[in-house]
Image (cartoon, rainbow, N blue to C red; front, side, top):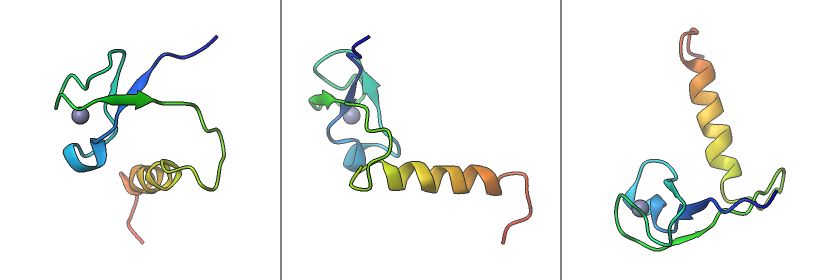
Length: 66
Ligand SMILES: [Zn+2]
């Protein structure tokens, strides 16, 4: 099934995290959205680092920090 989920093109500047939408404009900041094509495991994936950082932060949550 093809995903029509889009992501705010300016989320890095406007938000702390990606803002997803189904419309052509971000419901939060009004910027245009781009198609959030799934990139399962691509070293050039722009969101990969974000995801890894988030995971690290989550893992530290509730556990003793390094
Ligand atoms: Zn936005």
